[in-house]
Amino acid sequence: MLLTLLLALLTVPVLAPVPHDVHLSHGRMLIEGETVVFQVRFFRDDLERALAGGAENAPLLAPTPEVDARVAAYFGDHVALIADGTRLVGAVVTSAQSVEAGQETWTYRLVYQAASPPRQIHLRNTLLMEVFEEQRNFVRVLDTGSEKTHSFYFVKGSEAFTFAPAG
Image 1 (spheres, rainbow, N blue to C red):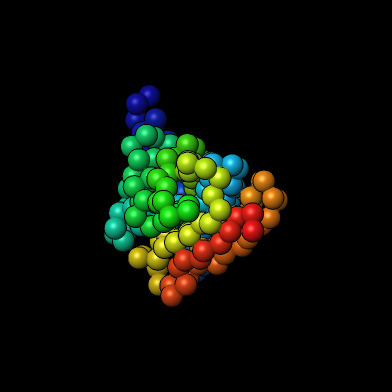
Image 2 (cartoon, rainbow, N blue to C red):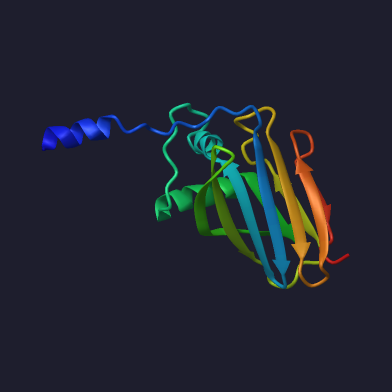
C-alpha cells in the first residue's frame, strides 16, 4: 500500500511556471481619506526571484506571515509612498494566489495610513526592476473623495511620479 502511494505521488505532474517574456506588475491604488490601499499582482516566478535576490532557485511563495513579512520588507525597499512629505509604511493585509491564462500570479494588498487625507503624493515604484531590465509596473490610482483617477507606467528611467489625488 505504501509503495502504491509513493508511486502515485511520483507520477503527479509538478506545475512548473510557464515561461513568459513579459515582466509586468499590475497595481491598483485606492485613496480613501487617510487610508491608502495598494494592491499589486505579479507573476509568481518573477516575485519569487526578486525575493531571492535574483537567484534562479527562489523560495516558494505561500500565504504565511513569514512570507508576507518578506513581501512587506521588499515593498518597503522598492515602493516609496510619500504623502505630503511623510513617507508611509505599508503592511500586508491579504495575499492570494490565482492562475490567469496559464500563468500563476500572486496578488498582495498593502495598507498605508496617513495622518490626514493626502493633498500630494509622490510614488516611486521599482518593483522587480533590480531583477528584470525590461520590467514594467502599471498602477491605476482612484481617489474615492473626488473619484479622480490617475494611471502611471513605471519603467527604468521613469520610476516616480508626483500627483495631487483630488486636484
